[in-house]
Image (cartoon, rainbow, N blue to C red; front, side, top):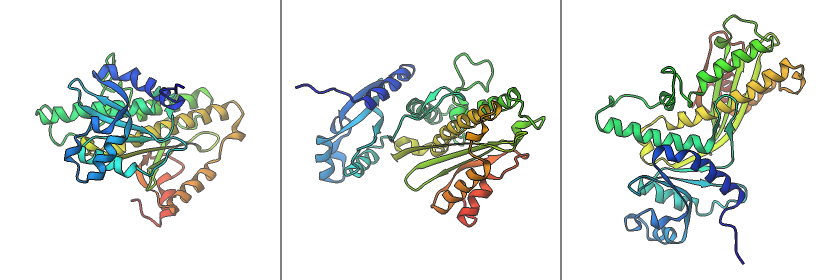
Length: 315
């Protein structure tokens, strides 16, 4: 009796990865034995070597030299965490970035980008960036920003498919205008943002904008764990870059809420007061600030709401 090589979730993820790896000269391998990627003789405990011989990675991306660049685990419903720490430890010792993802989130309208593709792009662009630093082509203090990588067919230096903030600001303000909801000649100055992270890597993102019908809010949640950052640790800004994806999701939600209110269906949109109460609640649950800030004309203070729940603490 034969079994399917992939389940539905694995098949969906491998399609998303294969759609992007060609541009980076990479290969995708699935269900790869850990010991085929990592030198088990270098591990600090015998039990880890035994586990590496018996276990596999869901997905491994390798470069043109047949060396692993990153591993991705899909920890969907029913996943057992019993041996996760062993695999995490192996990756940390091998300096191999390991991502654990838990769903199929995507940014639809702001930037057409799946979570899986975003993480693949993040790793390979960070790798190029770090090599440019090592080769002396960039100043050692130059910060990494994925949004700094522009499209091949870019019309200007700001034309990046990874810039969620700039793309969102333009689309959100245009949506306000199209729906007759603008109450300010500079509505982009009223956009406020907040992204908070739980101890177990849940990200919650919130975005607000002023309108003639009051403050409109967007929100989103995603969980992304990086138990082994590998070489990405040298980059430093990777957690912030991951938070940007959550911001893009929240902007998608805000864009949809603007359309709903503009079409007369505002009764299905959560009020700003309700969302602010949720933010205060997250502060009380031990979340910390990942990213935040906004325009000078915002009618709400998202960071202020968060600190109201944390007794003034941000981190």
